[in-house]
View (cartoon, rainbow, N blue to C red):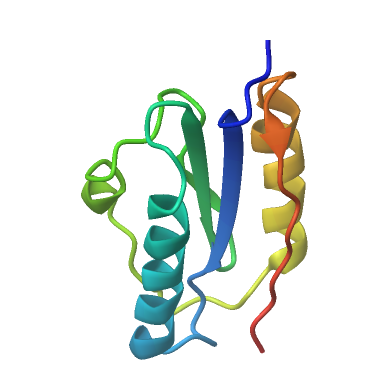
Length: 113
């Protein structure tokens, strides 16, 4: 049963060499501020970082707790190019297809660069 507070949030962060450490830190701050605005008991968060190869940093395996993402090692990779297409494919195959059927989906796509 969907409640008003059930949310599945997915984020894809550019960690390629095209993003400076300061910009990547801004991406992370935006992600944390956005997530913190949702209730922690019913919100699930998935995070993918990408450069040449995308990686699922956090999947739907548990509900959001404000401290949990800080344990995920999110850092830019200054040696690889950007592969946005592969990141979107990974999100579609492993994250978006596994979302809760009854949870509210908020679809927003933001590109930098």
